[in-house]
Length: 341
Image (cartoon, rainbow, N blue to C red; front, side, top):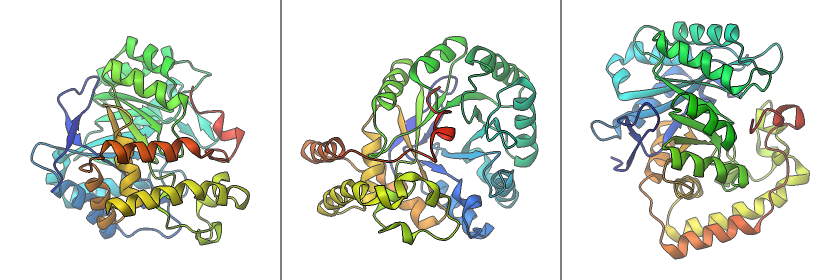
C-alpha cells in the first residue's frame, strides 16, 4: 500500500487524493482496444492500493476515444456499474470543450453546456462529475466568459469543482480571482519543464491550486522502452508527434539514457524516476501518469513514495538542464497554438 497523499486546492481543500493521479486516456484511444476487464483491474488496483480516506484521482474526457467520442466516460460508467462501491473512493476530473468539427477548443456557453450534459449522461447515474475543465482555453471567448459559464454550471449542481487545462500563469490568476480554481492541468516532465511550467507551478503554489502534471513520461518516450520510431505500432498517435520523428529521436534519447543510468543506480525504473522527479517541481504538483494495466498503475503509484537525496536530485536536474529537447510538443503550430492561453 502506498502511503503519501496530497490535498487538492480551490474549492476542494479537504479532498485528499493519491500522490500520483491516474490518466485513463489510452484505455480507449490505443490502436488495439483495451478490454473492459483489463481497464477495470487497472483502475481497481490503484484504488485498492490507497489508505482509507484517500481517493484515486482519475482523469478522463468527453473526447477520449479513437473517434473523439465518449468511449472513455462510457467505460467508466460500466466500471461503476460493476463496482458501485468505488464511486466514493474516486475523484473524477473530466475535460471537455473540444469541438471535433473545428479541431480546436470551443468554450461558448452552448458548446460547454452540450459537453457537460453529454458527459454527465455518459458517466451514468452512479458517479457525479467531481471536477470539470475545458481542455483548452478558448481565446475567442475569453477567460471571464468561460468562468461565468463554468460557475453557472456549479451553481446548477452539474459538477462540484472547476479546473483549467493548458492555461498560462496570468490566465490562472485571473480565473482564480473570479472563482477558486481547484486544479490546473499542464504538461510537466523532464522533456517539458520550461518557464511557462515554472510560472504556472509557482502561481498555483501561491494560490493553493493543485497542478495535475500530465505526460510526466513524455508520452512514453522517457520510459526508455521505445528504442526507435519503428517501435511504435502502426496507427499509434505518437508517430505524428515530432519528437518521435527520426530527425529528433536520437537527440532526445540522450536525456533518456542519462535518466536511465540514475534510475538504475537508485534501483527504480526510469518511469518511476521521472514521476517522482515531477513531484519535486512544486508543493501542489500531482503527476498525472497514464496506464491501462494494473501492474503499471501500481508502479506509477509507488513512485509517489520515492524520496531523492540531495545528490540524486542534483544529478537529475543537471541532466534535465543540459539537454536541449527538439521537436514540437504535439503536431505543429496548428495544435500548439492552443497551448498556454
